[in-house]
Length: 327
Image 1 (cartoon, rainbow, N blue to C red):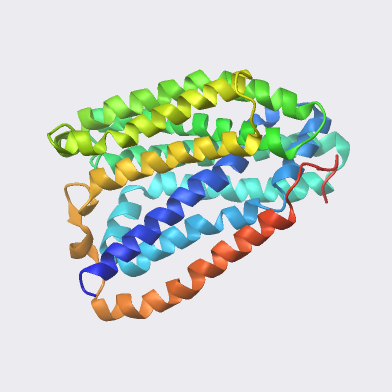
Image 2: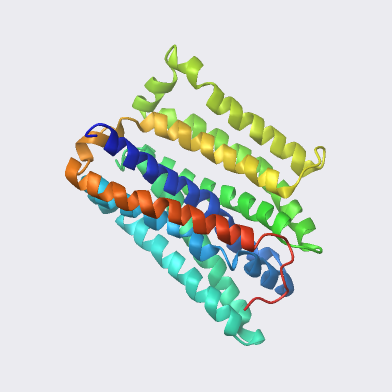
């Protein structure tokens, strides 16, 4: 148990953050797309995420909570290093929540202000999350090259969210909005591919440890399925968005999610056995075995409950019959 418990908690923490990126990513993407829609479409777009966005944010709470309980030393080091972007991210998320509630109650003449704030909060949260991801990959060491890498990921992550948001709207709305959303998704296809390519090339350049783990034999051969799977999904995504392959938006969304899964798998391999690259190992940072065992039973109950009510919400509110006004 002393060996396996830290690995289990690290896996659950990684899973929580992956699900957050995919699920909250699309509703952040919808917020980013608001400025490109008219007033009536904005109502439909916000209504499409209304039943889900609060539940989606549960995953980041779970992930950070597990990090605190299971790896307190790593939690302290990460949040100390990323204090400013983490604070700004929370401000963005709070701003989204306030704007979401007030835009429903505001008079028509003032609704545009809350729409703008909802979009601004979405952008602030997305940029900060990208910055935090880039800083984490570079081991939380703010050298000029690492800062440049973090800045690059800060602008690349919103591209993924825009694609997720557009595809979500394709499957969740009716009328002319899905057509417009499909056009947004097609425009994001090349920027998404460019972002994935640039991050894939830059990551081993800024981290010698990651480069050594990926570009040595036979590890390189074993790891080829990860980038090849992501490339196949990306290529199929382009065919589906262009109309050359007829498919449902759900499967297009699943293809983007699979790209995220492959990216997470590659990142997990790159980091292991560290929890902070080059600074702190998983077992070194883990809390006492007794504490982990006590927390394990709490996670064993909580995780299935969160998965269960997430599945329930998405099942109950399935379909694309979104009304023009949400309240």
